[in-house]
Every structure is written in C-alpha cells, then in structure tokens.
Image 1 (cartoon, rainbow, N blue to C red):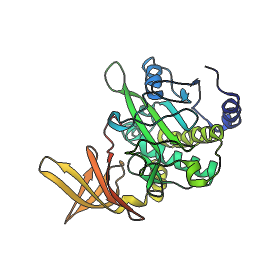
Image 2: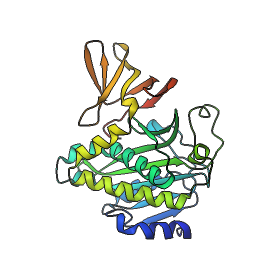
Image 3: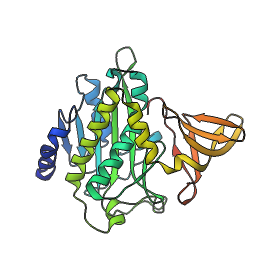
Length: 287
C-alpha cells in the first residue's frame, strides 16, 4: 500500500538524515506483524535498511510472543532490517547491542519530536514515569550457515490514547496522554528513523561507548533498583549496578555481582519511583 501523504512527506524531509535506512519503505493499513513482514524481506537477502510501517497490527508482539496492543490510528508500529554483523569492529558485540542502541534512538527521537524525555528500562522498554510508552523487539535472521545475517528491529510507540487491556491499564500510557496534546505520528516516525540511522551508524563504526554512555544517562533504574530473578537454585534478588560494556545487566547480590543476560526479571522498584513487582523479558542472544 502507498505511504500516506503525511508519512511520505515527513520521510522525504528526513531523507538526508536516514543514511542506510529507508532503502525501501512498505506501508500496510493492517498487518499481522511488522516484524514478520520485515523478516520475510531479510530472509531474501540484500534488504538492509528496508522499513515496514503499519497503521495497525493484528498479531503485534513483544518479548516471548507477548501481545503488543496495536489499534489503528493510535500507535507507531515499525520494523527495520539491519545487518550489524557487517560492523567494521567487533560485529558480534555490535549485534548484541542492537536493542540498547534502539532504546537510545527512540528516546532521543521522542524527545526531539515531542519534548517528552522518556526513561529507558533495561533492556527494551521506554517509560513515561512508571508506565510503558514504547517497546522494542529485535529478532535475528540466520543466513545459510545459521549464523546471524540480519536483525529485524521492531518497535511500537503508544502515541494516542487507547483502551488498554485491564492487565495493562496501570502499566501502559501514551505520548498524548502524558502531554495532553496531539502528536504528529508522521513526524515522529521520521524522527525515529533518523535517530535509528544515527545509532546504527555508531554500531557499524564501532562507536559503542557513545551508545552505552547515552543509554546509561537515560536509564536511572539501571542503578539502585531492587530486582528479583529465577535461577535453578531458586529465586535470587539484588540491587541493579549498571550495565557492562556488552549490555548485560549487573546486579549486586550480597558480596557478589551477577551478570544477567537471559531469562526473566521482576523489577521491584526503581531509583526514581515506586513500582509494584512486574516482569520484563531479558535480552537473549537473539533479541
């Protein structure tokens, strides 16, 4: 389907800032999942920079297949095809940092487009106060040798007020609900693509410190928040102590520091506000 005129104009205006992104742009009024559509493009090879945008998703998902509420006209649902394995420096590390780079990019884009400065919550959520306003899902696409060839980076941003499911109502919000004014979805979309292009270039050029420093600056809960997680030996708990240079969450538990890269974690409270315990998926190797 042809891009709506406002989206086409906004993306054209941003074209000088899009770098490797938006080599092709596909728009769907309704689709099952933007990630699935982008994965199909990535599987064909040569699709670096392809963008899939949808006005609504019927099977939008987050980590571990959890449903992402995607009603028409209310959110921004986008997926990009990236090839971080082509990075000039440490391609494996670049691939592992895709989700953190995307978190920084989306936070920067939202602030540029709306003035709202969201916090990043490790590893893949953006928060306005204690409630989620955006989420990220990065999924690896293997090549013939099963090595990671491409990464599909999907993100959803709650833009307009929407009727969340009862189990999400106290944990989710939207940009317009927070700001009490309309937000231009097309302009926001273009800004997210431009910010992702900048941070993608950082990955490909090995500027990992720039990503990590920006992420730490926007993630107050990565230090001083009480968390719990399950292990084969039972549930463990501790206090977040930042992230390491590969993006793993560090948690101080007694006299030791745990490095958490997979599984599921419960955030009990953050350094800036109080939360009842709820779970967020951890970053796995496939993101």
